Image (cartoon, rainbow, N blue to C red; front, side):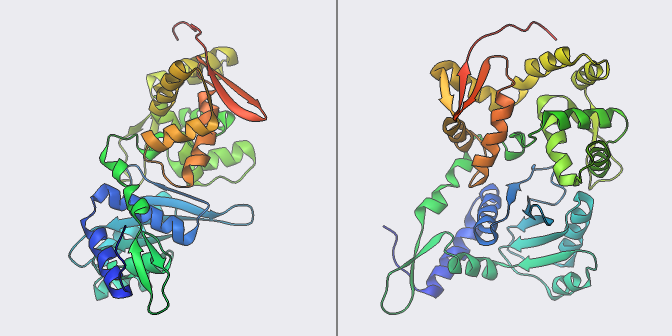
Length: 351
């Protein structure tokens, strides 16, 4: 049982834990804090080494408004200067975010705070180590307040901190778990790239023109990322270091060729033959082969155990993964009152 501490001792304990936790775990810890405090409609950690300065991304709103945000975390001992604010502003612009936050375990220099005030087009918030600990304490993230008739007492919440232990293992990154939930849009994205729309803003514009709906670069990125983990797209060297440029792989060109020729059945078979390239899909199929039949809740469990997806994101991601899983040639998706997946074997041949 965790010992009880007064407010000041709890703040110091939280700061020490935040400073000492593994850097990868710290990113996921910050995601959990943002998720608990702000309750965004969507949030995820980004692709490491390909995040262009953004470690966490998400959005708020849905029908009447949508605001997309990016968070950068710096687990530093030294003070953060204005250069980091400029870096974040550039990343927000390059990735199409409307506002962002810079979180650190240390503190900010005076010029960093002044740079935030000089940022004309982006709303940037700075959270230092003290403020992060205070937010966690006041919102009871990582700690729980204990019953007391006198001064406030707190105790460390072991369940919260233990959830990050899994990030010490070999997990599938969150970005490798599909978020694209429309296969028609998936096809439109690949067609658009084949016609020269290779950057996120261009792809979003292409989708808006084709569907008549409004698309953001973030939404478009769900589809390019899904196509890349399937083996249909790859990144090309870009003059814009803050933005990914996509091109079709040989496999992707084959697929788009079938689409353009109107060979929808062949394209469907090509897709089914390659959906197993997605690691989380194949892991679930391996489980199905042993268990034969599993409900959606089992899919959620596998995602929670095998990937870096955490929190409320697991349920949403499982819904999308379920659609992709139903495209696998060895899986039958049954949705009658309750969603189930069954294993069966079919040889589609080579495509």
